[in-house]
Image (cartoon, rainbow, N blue to C red; front, side, top):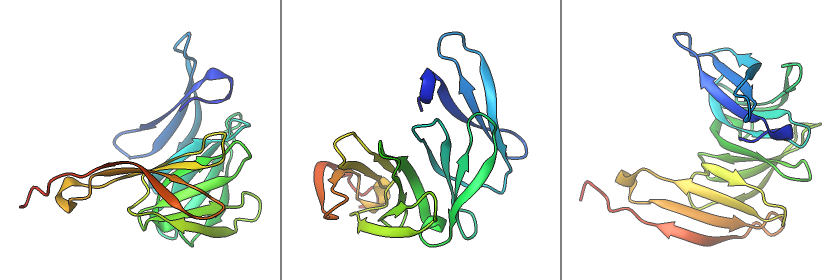
Length: 178
């Protein structure tokens, strides 16, 4: 992902302990700095970068948590836990700072950064594996399903006000078990 100031934000898994390391890489010089090292107990459910450059990370282990990582200091704080977060598959931050999580349960959930309150905005057709929030305010939601389920890939425009999802692209796979 592209961070504030043009740095590339990279997630690497370190061996053999399975910890997750977030790095900021200067795209011109190739130099890097560590932003944070999360313990192996954190199970990655996607990350996004807010307007100030902080990382918002979905951790779906156990009760599930949404974490904020200060990109300057590496300090990790919990924004929210429980609710839809144990099924978090993707996370996005809008231009207005709104945090949205897509789940393996096909839910699209807004999370208030300051109170941790979770609000169900709507349900998608399939598990939400990616969310992009363009400046126009309507979100682009992607679903990718294994071919053995016969579902394929679906990309939808999701209106956060009405909760209505409209197909932009649908690619059905043939079930390999047929």
